[in-house]
Image (cartoon, rainbow, N blue to C red; front, side, top):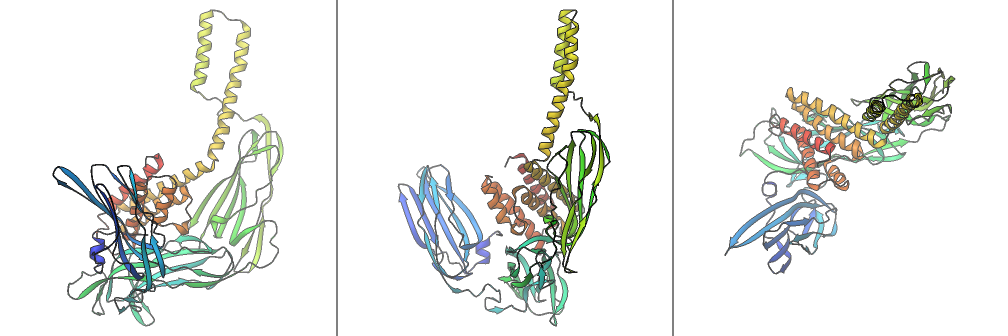
Length: 596
């Protein structure tokens, strides 16, 4: 995730010397292309600036193709500038695109692939070679800032509720920041969230925007929960829970026992610095599930569950939809719960199931999953809806548990189901109108025509109804339609809640709901894994899906703004609520309408 701030390079990186080394200059008539870098040799995590500039005479637009920056962390950019000067009635346009970067690890790297297209001519920019040596004063662990030892003043702990768990059993991890009373965080400039390789991850409620006092190892700190997650291991063995990394602008002040971490800054008594801190990597031991009588009903569920089946009534007409529900309740990974598809009588036409889930993410994941089959009985008679079995592993008792429901008898009578058979469509009205006109023209009509019409029109209506119902069932069970509907529903619910929080001026929860509305929509609609959801991932996915890059960047900036308001003690949280709400509403509306 990349945060951008006004005046970013000048304010936060005074060490950057803008006597850049000219790496390449190409002139073709009145067009000039330059690339510059502040340093050719840098340390790991040391920030430097790279600049791509152009100069030409004319009025056409410039298209910039960015370089490949996968080997670097992007702290800012692309930052664009443009100016026009007129000399002797000739307009000269100059501009640039710049980035603030840092190297991830030792080695020699190239910044390549950048190009400008001016007046239809493409200019490839010569690659820039960067050599990375040693480590900067602000290393990966964040132990030092400009030579200052901050190990006991500002740090993040990754706290897990258990060091050992079974495959599929929930592990709860909490990332908590500890701030010494003589340190005041201003805002977060960059955040790298954990990826949870080897786990299925679910975000939990419980993060806090407020610092609260806590004594840790005999020392007083101000603390806050940055993030909580429920992790479900997907493989056994020793797994690592990846860290969370933050780059913050902080103020160091003189020690004071009653220091307020959010008090106003007094010039001369404090100093503002940028520091990077990371939580440690946490190792957990994941046990394989034991051998046992897992039976044919085991699909990998771990936790504690209940099972039941339901049908609304026991007597139906032919062709009347029968809704057969399989309901699972309990604690565990609700998302991955599955039941083997039942075998139904061949007299039933079986539509693909509709699945609904409810979850409680306040601590241990719990909820329900309802799998609903719609059956269309084609023949009369007495039938039994099948029994359903479900097996899971209970990590508390270390045993496999199995539940099996009873068969549900139903009766299908031979009377045909014709509810809603008469549908007044424009086509049917035209048919009757045509018949009426024909009779008026003829004056009298033969009995044969009346018999044909009286038999034909109900058949047309019935055929239309059956076709309509089939199309409607197909539409409702189409995966793309289900995904779109789920995304719309989730976004609408979250934005409705955000509106209530806006009216209540509850900015603590508002920014979380606004971000979740957009993130939930993107996760559901575009298949982004929850554990991989970042603003940068959202931008990348949308561009890959063919969305306008400018629109994708707009979404990224909104997510970054929401995160800044959620986690950083910055001013303007109350004042910007309406602006953020309007931006989120507009973006979701444009995503739905396809007008991006």
